Image (cartoon, rainbow, N blue to C red; front, side, top):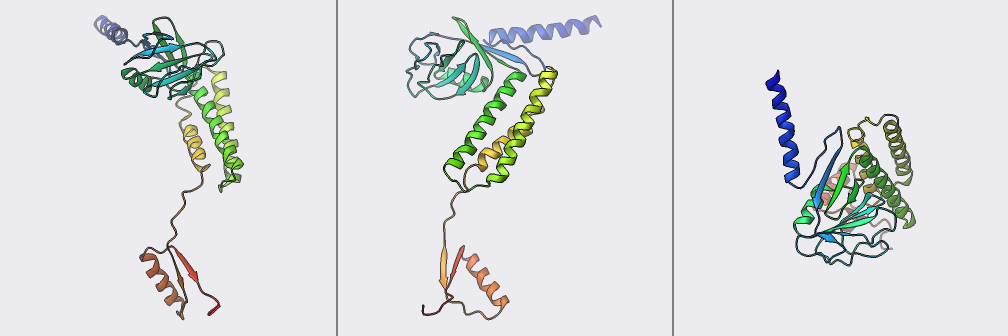
Length: 252
């Protein structure tokens, strides 16, 4: 029993050391962990492979297109990607800007809704149940914006059906949030996959279907029976025709 206990402790120590020496500290929970990475400085030019913090609130990072940025608003990751990002004015807001290998790290480790903080030497991101809820909230807001945009631009979509699905999606989100607030150990991540998929589906359906190329023929029908008509239409279909314009009033 003692040997087994020592083995377990040794495994935990090795796991922690690996995290420290790789530049990432990972705290494991049901759905909770933190990752940290060293930065090259604050409000300095972003050079090759640099990771830079920009925190001059109300201004822009003034970075070029060769990088990737994470916008943190009031301590929460609210945007991923892009350059020359606006730095929010709220307390605990900043932008993490990466280049080269730093871009890879940000893309692999940071998602919308994570909590974020930084010191003069490193930045830390934390993922937990609240991250999932925040991610869901942002996705729901984007879903509503997609629907409103479709309505404002008179797109040809099924408004009635989508409106009902949006209402149901919001109800599902509120139920997840209530379950988490009642019990912080509730596994929001495991119970939100279907809702994420539904939101994605709704957003996709807020766009009109792609237009189809018209390949039509103008015909004066000579067929006398239903079978003959069906046979002729099948021939046209096999030839790639998808529209038939029938002359119903001969010679005008």
